[in-house]
Image 1 (cartoon, rainbow, N blue to C red):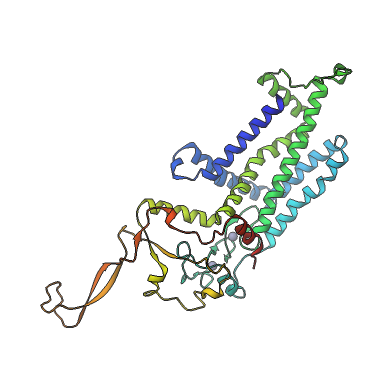
Image 2 (image 1 turned 90 degrees about the horizontal axis):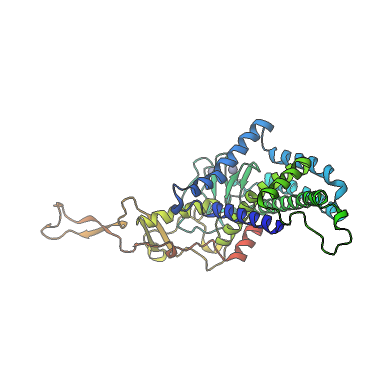
Length: 404
Ligand SMILES: [Zn+2]
Ligand SMILES: [Zn+2]
């Protein structure tokens, strides 16, 4: 019963945290505890850790320090009771997060004058989240599709995902692979540490509550947790954690960090599945709300091109130069209007003979604003295509291998 109960509690808590991490931002949860927990998870806890980090360690080594302290407490206390295999797995599991943290930190996705052209042709403009013709006022160049200026890194970042305080760098096109490897390696280390600690404490409880002398010669070995009620069960664990405080403390810390690390990992798997960056997912949420407010219109690219021809090639690269599957280009041009009215166009018409329609009494043509019938109202996000979504596997390949 003990194991089933523990697993049930762990699985339920993980599922709940993952649910909050993924869906807590949905409008349906606004002004509910779910939305608060979502902010707690994504804003308050990271900020608190960041502030603590700044106060305690100057900056950014808090994570490394935490890992070292945990290992210094845990490993000597557990050393004699672990098998050779259990110990042999430890060095790579300990080194991996540090190595990936280092790579995430030193791998830059910043756009420089040297790599600007390559960044421009890495992704096509989707004419929804990213339109050509916008310039970064700080970097003084055209903003490539999927890029974003980061005020902390003081640069425009290719395929900017978010600025991560843990790696003290932006997560972007070039280090996305290392960032995800970091998430996987942290989750693995936390699971392994929790599992080792749990096994050691469980053995300690078994030795204490069911001494081997009692079960000697009996065919059924009795588990210590059999026939304990909840109170006794937690009491037993509290005792084990207290007497084995070095293992117990590290195990509890690892278990508490598992939902957070798993939440991030699952969230990034979801982003890969959806073909989005964190930055783009926020933009899509805004579009969804604007569509619900009925202020979004779309027009077919090819009909709009009659009035809006392509910009110069260094601002809007030609389609053949963009390194993205040939058929996958923006079909729709998306706009939001301030008043929710259909975009208008100016037409020039010949002034009628007696000028009855307007106050224009001169000769020649007059200008008139009329609704532009090429634009139709968007009523559902399903009418909008995410051209950066090629399907899970291709998104994965793009995220891990399409690096500048
Ligand atoms: Zn910039
Ligand atoms: Zn940044």
